[in-house]
Image: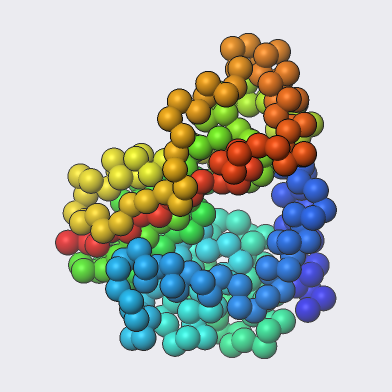
Length: 282
């Protein structure tokens, strides 16, 4: 368990340097890593969006793209699934290896957590029953190419499932602060100045929406089963912000910071609005 803590602290120090989150966030993420049951809720989430209760009662071949520390992959393996994961972050994969060792899991499972590019997985076509990306696609500079690859390695009749933040809503899920929708990267710096946060996280996420993902999927060889937001998107939410100039953006951020820290903002400014999309390959 000491090795797992050590690997997580390396990962958290990088995250803290990039996003400037406080110690409570680090403690929360450490607790997740130390929980051998973390992310088992994904089984029910996937079954719900593909509209097939009891789907996991039969062994399935599963690929998680952006698998991070592999918590879902190892949970799936424990439940008898043919599960694989791929991620390009060696530090997250190192946490995955430490979790396997710390929890006394089969060491051969390390070979199921692959270091690689989700847009070119190296798997043969029509390999998996389910390909899932959980809080992943917003980190991808080429979402169209990656989604196409996810569909390529899915069997006909199989499913591609994505969960991610919807950036039409006024909150950024990685900095965990209110955020003007689709703010330019230069004005993002002024916004972060107002929250006294570092710029390092700006190159680690891209604006995604459920409409964008559906637009990528619609011309492909698939049938859309589910597409939803977990809370309502407020129309014209940008009217709550003044980002007309860098200085105005900075001053607006300072005002939002005071209200955010006092928890005086509506829910959609206090927590991320996420989407779920599920399609079946034809």
